[in-house]
Length: 97
Image (cartoon, rainbow, N blue to C red):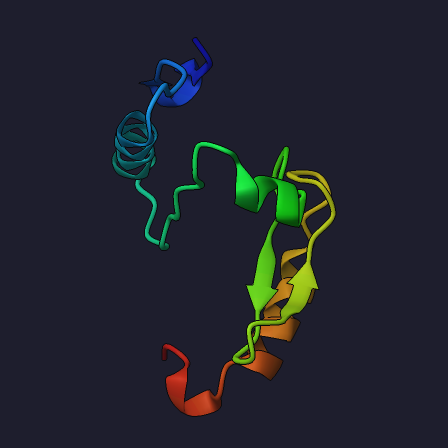
């Protein structure tokens, strides 16, 4: 049973999409995430397509193209580089103030 005991998140491996969605919702709530969380299908199509394991950060531009892909995280994350790409991709009138 994989989990993150430090953050009090412990979930059983999903056997169905509903299990996976429930686990994702638990993580969003318990970890206090304030960003959209997407749930991959049971075949892990997104993980395979984007080599998202163990962790990756992506910026997808308005045309649906990958504008930024981090190195494997968390140690490969470069927040400053990601912010720079986000600033170039997100129109100024859509940025949070």
